[in-house]
Length: 427
Image (cartoon, rainbow, N blue to C red):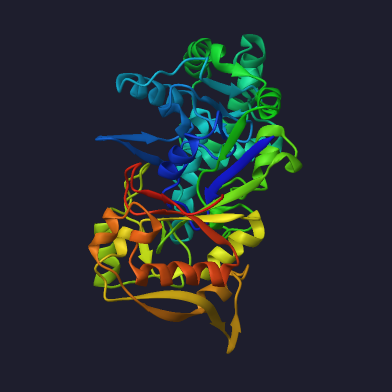
């Protein structure tokens, strides 16, 4: 068996789309195991840019099987919008190269309304969600009242489960938030039509992936990043699923012993979207300059990302929690031209030096980053096509990441295109 996980090592937006696309070339099957259409991957192929949200990045190769696992929450409207977009761009998407788990939970219209209503109700304590219904859908999953894909494609079961859910959700919408109720008949009609379209794509993906793994290479693709994990992220400013490598087993239905390794995607600096403490954030002109040069705006929302120096403490946690076997470092070209760079190698908390991310956001907000300074490199790094061509100062920067985290760097990305990717060693 040959199975690898590729996932974000920071707060997401590390360039997973490009790296998954790059790694997918050597895989036969690409699997998405968690999250929903709140994620966004941008992939550049030649002169074309593709923006993906739910469909695995392997869809851009004609010979790959793409799988959406049971750990994903699925918005039927969104996925068909994405399918139609890809077909319009000349990408083939059929039940032969895309399969969807019958156990995945379905995002319903009331989930989106509840998402927006709860964010508004929180006021200054808002989480900063995308308001796409992700959290409320996972809430129903945990509360055991959710509607799964297997329910959606069974007209009788769907009608019954929808009726029960609409009654409860309408009570919450009207009595708690003072909003208008949703219409059962309208949702039933709309989603019954969507069910007819989704039915050919639906399979037991656990069985499919297990059988494929016996003699083919499988790549598991994560969404969001390590610090957005529901357990190990900066709670409550997190997503509603396990974004770490541990989420693979539950999110697709295969045992952890079948996975050979995990590649963590790490941006050469740190960004995050949404609320919460950010120890290395640059609240100055330099932070703004990095944002503009790196085009740090959300693929899904368009929101500007907060930018800061590389936080190696975060990467060390990602190694520990996800068992990373190597890093793929992206967007090192964005830092080109800066005279001096910094890497955070620890925090000072209440007079003590720590090398881990505290669970308490109150403590994290008090953490003062401890920096090591490095010489920068010039714009020529974007033209490098081998490790030997990378400037020496950049190599020193990369070596520090390896030295501090204990994980080697297997890939360095010097630009957004496929050919701007340098493989250094084994994954």
